[in-house]
Structure formats: structure tokens, C-alpha cells
Image 1 (cartoon, one colour):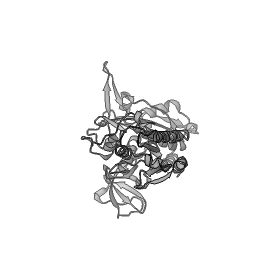
Image 2 (image 1 turned 180 degrees about the vertical axis):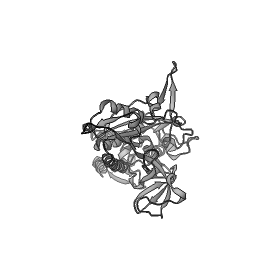
Image 3 (image 1 turned 135 degrees about the vertical axis):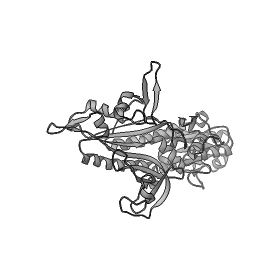
Image 4 (image 1 turned 90 degrees about the horizontal axis):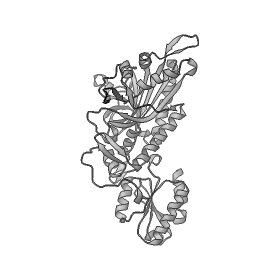
Length: 417
């Protein structure tokens, strides 16, 4: 992609109405545009990052047997009344001109449960796992924290269906492992803890995945012995204790909730009378689990963690491009060499953003740091005199000079490392 043709521009001014680092950097870097409070447009750079996160999530959900579907955002009022959740305060509602009311989905138990009931009857059809990656809506009274907490956001929600508690528990543990694989691929696993939280109506505990960050809205207590945490909200008598080992010497920290999983058991299947016939022909209620992770929230979390005074530092796995090729100067020979490397990178299917703009070196370097692509290749009169290019990793201060004819192999090796 040539940067001169890229839709969306960088800006050096900090948005006045954005307090969070993720919103400031994503807007300044040309990744998102704020439409209104809690609602953002994802520009080409931002959409590429979001798509990579979604694909990582999709691959890990498929690996544990998930089947992807797409359910409607516009939902039936009657189904929400069936579960007694129509009047919950986070539900956004719309009314048509003929006075019919609908809900805008912030979750999809009320859709997926009757859907599954329509197609499944026998114990032979279990277990099965349905998931989607879809836009959700939430009536946040005070949308804040950029894309970490919005009124419109992307969500992967997976629903599992089981004939026994044993089978539900087995898949629940499988989902935990899959989530940590996602966080590992997004380079935040070492800051993310399986966190015990309130189970609400479903069980004693649910589990959140909390990523330590000063931008976090939650307080967690970390047991470094067990490498787990508990959410402050479930701490009794202001006296936290590890639910696994009983350790009371816990570390307090702020964190961002990047995922959560619940054992729903029969809460929704009972409401919709969703039963299956067992081997003896007896009817039993289906058991369910729910597993959520927000791609947009994960994107915001990564930005909160990986940045410096100059801009974003994207992990390779989710960066919009792998290489930022920067051409300095208008000399025909410089441009010719830059075009040669650009074409070679494209031929090797290496994602490259080529800064071919007629801008100063200072502007180009400042933009490159702000956008945060992992590897920068600079071609200039100075490097060309030595038949070389300048190579700099975004995560490092120094740079190195390598021969131009070795540049492609160097970049390929960098992709593999």
C-alpha cells in the first residue's frame, strides 16, 4: 500500500475529548475516527489490525470445535421477555413507525438458545459449540476509555451445549486454554491473569481474563504462587485470599477485563424449555456455557500496553503492516530503488506500507513512529551511496545498515523470528 493513497491521516494534536491513551494514539495514528461518544469508525489501518485479531480468535475457536455463525443484532422483544431480561438497563431499544419494539443485542443467549432448540433433539447431537464475531450495542451511561468501553463494539461470543456437567467442565477448561493462546499470540499473555469473579445467577464463580494495565477499570489481587487473581468485587470483608491456595499475600493491581467465561448451566435452556432425549428416551434440560472476548477491546488493550512517547508499538502478529518502507528524497535513483524493494516485498507477500509522499524526513519518521509498524526500512541518498538501506525495529532505539540486495532476505528472516 502506498501511503500517498492511504485513506486516513496522522495528526499530532491530542484529541481534546479523549482521556485514554488508546483513543489518543489510535486517532492520531489514523486508525480510528470518533463518530460520537462510545462509537468509532475503523479506518483502513485500524480495520487491518481488527481483522488480524479476529482471525487469531477465529483460528483458536475453530481449533476447539467451534462453528461460526452470524446472528442478528436486531432482536425479538418476546425472547427477552421470556428470560426476564427485557428491562435490563444496558439494553438499547428501537421502535418502528408502526410502534413495534426491538432490542439491539448486547449478548445473544436469547437468540442462540431457541436457535439451537430448533435444530437439536437427541443426545447424539451433543456437544456442539456455536460462535460469532459481531457488533454489539450497550447502553453505557458514560462511554469512556476509548475503544475499551463503547456503546458499539465488536465481540466474539461462543456458546457451548452439553448433556452433562462433566462434559461442560471439560469444554470450559478447553476454552480457558484457548483464551490464553489468543493472548499469547497478541503478546499480552504475560500480563493476563485468570481471575475469579462473581458467578451471579450461574455459579459461585465465573472467570475473567484480566490484563494488568494502569488504564484498567478493575482492581484485582494477584496470587503469584498460583498465577491467578481475584476481582476486588467478590472480596469479602476487604480481606482478599487466593481461592486455590489460601495465600493472603496478594499483589493489588489495576487491570482491563479482556475476556470472560461463564457456566450458564440451565438458566436459559429452562426459560426456553430446551431439552434433549437421553439414551433411555428421557427428557433432560441442556446445559450451556458462554465465552466472550472483545476484538476491539483487545486492540485497545494492546495499545495501552505497547506504546512510548512517540506512538504505538504493534506486536508483529496484529500490526497493520509488517514493514514501513520510507523513501527520503525526490532523486530518481532513490525512488527507483524504493520502488524495486516495494515490488519485491509485495512479490514475497510481505505486508508493506510504502511512504512515497513528498514530505520531509522529520515528518515521515514522526509518522512512522506514531503508526508503529514493527520494522522500518529507509532508503535515502546517504544509504544509496553505500548500496545499502537503513533498518530499524520500532521496539528498539538503534538502527543498522545492511546491503540493499540483502534487505529482502533480512526482512523474511525477521518475519520468521
